[in-house]
Length: 68
Image 1 (cartoon, rainbow, N blue to C red):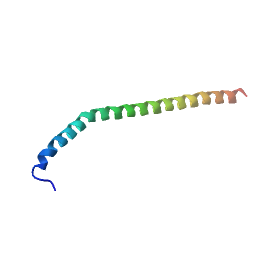
Image 2: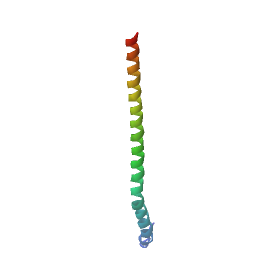
Image 3: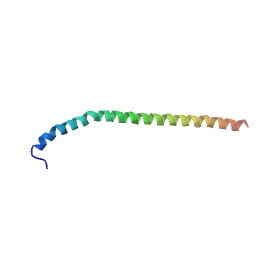
Image 4: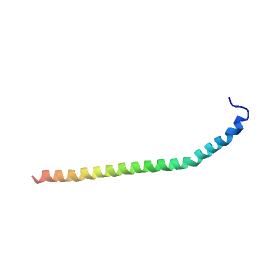
């Protein structure tokens, strides 16, 4: 059971918890954006490598078919 003075004793804890969350939210957002950017970057590089491989192999396979 919380006494009438219990609210006053919990106020510093609630205030410090609130300020801590407010302080670290931007860092969490920055880290999240960094991870998202890295994932997009790696997916784009993988797509580019697959696209280039398909173009090169497609070119050489059609060149080989024309030659014979």
